Length: 351
Picture (cartoon, rainbow, N blue to C red):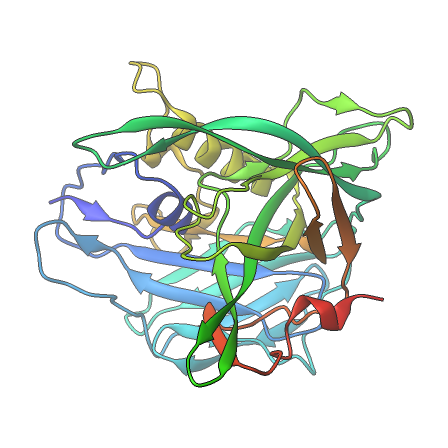
């Protein structure tokens, strides 16, 4: 029987076909998704079972497990199941410390015990600057029956990353783009709608790589995303007022980088015979009570830098990047306000 394991990188970010390995029994396989950062907050570990192909199964949470995190000093930090399959840390007792290492421990109701490898929380990397470069880029549009390549003019967004000990820092980036636009409706009186739409501008895993362009200060110029200026590309009925870009930059240890590098290679594959396959992704979860049992997923420990910038696109040749540290990190994916500027409208964060 074949199984689908929800490695979210491939499932969400790629439309390419993923290889599913043939398993020789009907046992479910544990899937682990967990992330610990340097931020003092509640951290989440999600446990679920793999899903078999061809069967009508939804999300299969793993409940009633005993889950805790340990550090190299053998301190134990227990997680509490908040909802089926979702286990949360206590932000008052578990405060990750940079350069410390952490391991995930899971005990299931049936007695199986799983552990991750120790993961080191490396220090956070800050960005030196951000800028936009005008350019053009080709995108595949249409559907699988009538694919079409179309060229869009837009802004290539680059961040400047400092060298760390004369080497390129291993990092991955999650980027959210908030597009704000306004339009008027004429009736007995004129009304104005102030709206926003949140999208993911990247379709692949965004990681630092070996080859880079360097500026005069030997900073690394890393591309975050390309922002087409076309309202049709973003599926908008009205012209945008501005872009707001939120960047989460994760500093990866060697093992985490290997996992995301393999995912990147999988999504970049061009269907040649030597292309990597999804089963090659390196899980760091092991069944210590029965080495013959497999597990999927990854327990990641990475520091993160959160940054938000307002991009005022004045013209085809002029655009400003304005740091907006007070802009909220979590907002609804879309919304509109009638005749009143919403609290997240970009002008409220301009100095």
